[in-house]
Length: 178
Image (cartoon, rainbow, N blue to C red; front, side, top):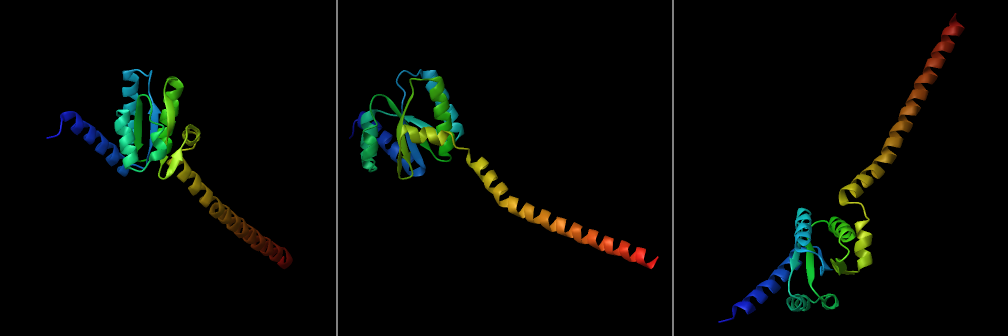
């Protein structure tokens, strides 16, 4: 029979692996010096965007990362750290983290992984400056709609000129017949 501590470690490791398999990526943070209520506030804000913060012992996180083949991220796991798994929008998650970091300078964004790409702090910061997916979709729709709108305007102007021309011909015929 296994000891309870070993069962808890295995459960935590399995939870990290499961979260990784169901998410688009993860961000590693170092939260040393951030108060517990502030960390809880961050956790709640992240949950609203479909991300979750998982605090775990470093040895368990390292073992899980090695088990997932993420040896490049193992070196980022030092001091008290948290793993943020995001399922939906990495831009929203990075915006929340960068804003939280401005208010809490002790928080360190160590890096992460987005699909197969290793993220650095600069990548996360750059991602936080991008517009959201909905804004990008709106920009694409407006961009696609612009040529169509201009085409309709050109057709409308041509039609107006044609009607004006017919009206002028009509007026000229009326003058010549009188």
